[in-house]
Image (cartoon, rainbow, N blue to C red):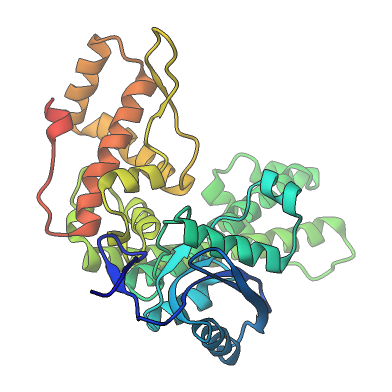
Length: 369
């Protein structure tokens, strides 16, 4: 009977080929090059090498790894950044990947820091089973949602900066111009500034009018870009998970963020608890002696945590079942913060069912409790 070896996918095993050395790889990724190391099943270092981060270089890296024996698993640093292309390349060729965090400070102080050392540490993390997180896939609709979402976020930040600059420029503008604009609302100020004209730039007042006009028009262009991105995101989310948007308090932006956090392969998380941990909603025990309590989890994806927080605030205001639950917990002596944390934990579990399977039936057991 052939020997079975572990896989990065839960419940999956691979058959070892008799006579072939079992190999575990590790890759330290960078913008221009990737450094790879390989170890055998007993932890012996087989070697390390550096390859360019190009299509030809990725193929050479793969061939170098499988040239040592049967490739069992590869630990990769930065699968969401510099290692994204490598992760997609190896996944397409059936290689089992795990996401590897950089070595902790104690290890770095003991062994030092270099690309081969980091690559070897990644390989040993894959061998020891310390690294178990399956990387996100970047090949589906969620990746399309992510890139549009990132572009929209940049536009929002740029518009906020332009609005703040326009506001400060009005404060320091010549008195006559300031008195003309100060009584107006923000929208009226932007519209008025967009209509300004100026030719003589040697006059500070006219130059200020020209600068305000440019800022106002920039704000208008960015607003149009943001609105277009929101329409695109809404269409994509509705097409992918219509049931998610039908949930109380869940808007297209919150739904998009939760989908991005889960990725194109949400099945890499074996339970709703894994998604809750990824969102930073799992309670952290801080019990000691007779004290039994939990504290806020400050880890995880804070953008996903923020999306859950927004949904909770909306449900507390408009959703009767959530309001009833909150009133019951307040009567038990729970604080508002405790209630929100419980609701965020519930929502992470509840909404993950729709992300994993859009036709999943709703689970309201917590709110009904």
